[in-house]
Every structure is written in C-alpha cells, then in structure tokens.
Amino acid sequence: MVTVSNGKEEKSVLISATGFMVVLAKDYVIAPKERAVASKTPVRNAFLFGFKTVGWSMVALFLATSTLTFTKVIDTRVVLTGSMMPSINPGDIVFTAPVSRISPKINDVVVYSGKRFDGSPVAPFAHRIIGGTPSEGFIMKGDANPESDVQRPKLSEIEGVVFFRAPFVGKLLQPQTMMLLLLSGFGIWLIIGAFREEE
Image (cartoon, rainbow, N blue to C red; front, side, top):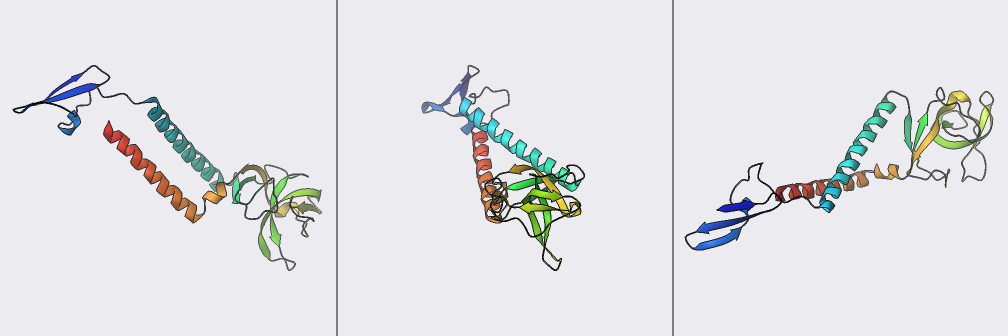
C-alpha cells in the first residue's frame, strides 16, 4: 500500500496481484501520530468548542454554588408556587444571602419561615416586604396575592434576602428532567466519540 500526503489530505492506493485500488489507509493500518490527516471543519470546531465551553461553565457554576452554600455564604431554594409572579415564577431558583450580609428593607424579596397560628412551622415563603420594621415585624406580601400575609416575621425569622434569580433552572432538577438530560448528554458524548474515531 502506498500513501501520499500533502499536509492537508492524503490518498492511499493498495497494490496487489490483481491490480491497483484506491482505499482508505485507516482500514488497513494504524496511522502514526505524525501522519497528516484531514483538517477539522469550522462547523465541527465551533460545535466542539461550544459543547466544551458550556460543559465546563456548568461544572464551574455548580462547584461555586455548592461551595458557597456549604459555607453558608449563600442559600438556594426552588420556588414552588406562583405567589410572586411575574417577578418570580414556579421553577425558578432564588439565591439568598443571610441578614448578617444584606439587611432587609422595604421592596426587598426575602425568605421567611411560615408558621401556623399555633406557632408550628409550615414552610419557607419568598415574599416582598411592603412595610413594617425589623423589631415590630415586617408586612409581607406575594406580588400575585390580593392581600398581605397574616404573619409579621421579625428580623430573627428572616432566613435570607433574595439577591439573584435563575429562571427555569428548578424545573431541570426534577427526576424526569434530570434523566432526560443525562441521556441527552450520553448521546452527545457518543456522537463526539464517533467524530474522533473518524479522525
């Protein structure tokens, strides 16, 4: 077999007793690393670069968020109800900072511990401060609710002040969506592996 290369592409010819035949060298021999191969296309380069950039960005964001949450610098919560629509929607993730870092004030959205009339906890709520004071209690209201909350949480009952919202991310954390994303990622990994084998 004879292979001729110009640095960008190559042609191989198999010489046998029956004659000459143009072939793909990779079907007959394992190519050395220094052998010239066809250059990658711009579309393929852009796809691989974009895939790697998104992947590493997601990993970095996940690690940073996990570290900050573990060290109690911030906290994250998935919004389950539509009481704060349209500013915060179900499925959004809200990032909160403790009141020791950000002092809550009127018009801020805060997370506080909701309680029943007997004082037993219900669930945390993310609502807006529309009045009140830290010592006497804040007047809270969901943007989509017609009336303010019955409970008047004091500063000690405020779990955090919302400083950032990540839309729709909470919906991705559902088990069915996570499984779909894992399967999609595995499929993309197989496609990239097939591209590399063709090289």
